[in-house]
Amino acid sequence: MELYKHQNIKIYNSLSKSKETFKSLEEGNIGMYVCGPTVYSNVHLGNVRTFMSFDLIYRYFLHLGYKVRYVRNITDAGHLENDADEGEDRISKKARLEQLEPMEVVQQYTVDFHNIMNKMNNLPPSIEPTATGHIIEQIEIIKTILEKGLAYIVDGSVYFDVLKYNETAQYGILSGRNIEDAIHNTRTLDGQSEKKNPQDFALWKKAKPEHIMRWPSPWSDGFPGWHLECTAMSTKYLGSKFDIHGGGMDLKFPHHECEIAQAKSCNQTDPVNYWMHANMLIMNGQKMAKSTGNFILPNDIFTGENTILSKAFAPSVVRFFMLQAHYRSVLDFSSEALEASEKGFFKLMEAVNNLTNIKAGRTSSINIKAWEDACYSAMNDDFNSPILIAQLFEAVRYINLLKLESATLTQEDLDRFTTLINAFVFDVLGLENNVKKDTSSQLGAVVEVLIKLRNEARANKNWALSDQIRDELLEKGIQLKDGKEGTTFSIN
Ligand code: AMP
Ligand code: ZN
Image 1 (cartoon, rainbow, N blue to C red):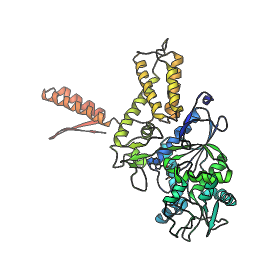
Image 2: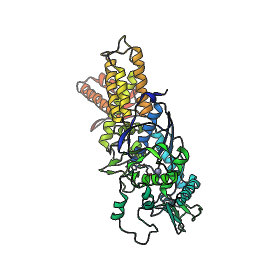
Image 3: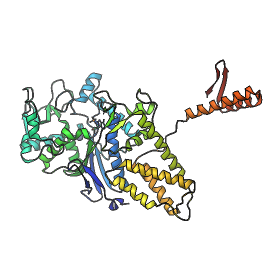
Image 4: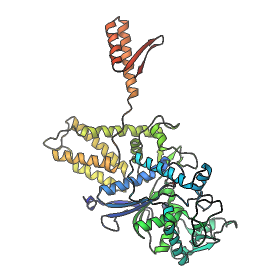
């Protein structure tokens, strides 16, 4: 069904810094590229938030009937320790420290990444290319940029000439940085660097003798610069101009700025129509990040094995928590916030379960069409999941009224309502109705009530009742033990 023909989607474009009406280059088709993880460590929940934000967007497009080619890469080479093209390759460093082959590191963390994406119910992308699988394409791009005179070679390394590029184009167009100011404000190079200008960035780096990950090229045995892989893979699979490019806010500069410069130098066109950036997950008032140690791993949330949270939380509850914030808002992670989300999640799922027992009436006292329009408007307004969730809680209210027979729906409206709720909850938000409520604390409280009643019976010498309570609980697997300190219980 081509639902998209009836919807008017607005997307906040980081390039124009405004909400724009979305129109795909080819009717009914969307090309979307999202920067994937650097697989040198386990993904933390902050990384997961960004990938989940784009999963929501992907899911909504699919729901509307678009054919989407969603490309999300795996960075398995070229990402150095800092953004100024300095330091060791992150994967090589891990391999050296752990005495592993770099590809063992890559394999281990790619498997972990897929595992977490599955648990979080993120759909796999259509293509998941790797940087090391596209070295030839990256070398070809460097050759083209060199031919255009927009890069220079120094001792086997190739650097992009930002000043030269800026003569005819605008470096800083995405991040809003002014290159002239940047040049005035940065210290001159200390002579250690091969770059003509600190703003220049590496397209190819000659490998030092100890650098393990290296490939032959016309310039040296070396490796590609980090920004290059995304230009190579997005161009290869989506063309020189495509619809959407996404990533976390922190990738805007320099990564995405450099991608624009590279692609524009090669293809004479702006590569992307809509640049989308997801905002950060924060914890303890700071961005969640591996480097500062301020992070939590998804599996440690699911098992409860951590020192940050009061208890374990299921993946779908974590997903619901993140969807309650708009993807462009900062989201603060805390135990209290997760607990509140869990309550809301169970309330929603209980209502979804109740929906199947509702009987149709002869008339409708709820305007389902108006509710449907409000749900679509929320998602059409730059994928506003918190507003959609507010509408779903409005639906929970309707379901409770229908259950009490204080409201009615015709069979046709009831069917439509059921289809839409399922579509929004499961297909678009990607929630799963498979989380069991942890009722152990309530069970304990119930047993305590029975112990109190049994004690009263014993005080009244009502031995028949006190024995009955003890024996019937035992039949259910709950054993009471009378001791000096009072009665305790164990559950088998
Ligand atoms: P990396 O593996 O470091 O390249 O990061 C993978 C993705 O996670 C990128 O899109 C980052 O922007 C994103 N990311 C990193 N930290 C956070 C965070 N605290 N909140 C949301 N996204 C993040
Ligand atoms: Zn990228």
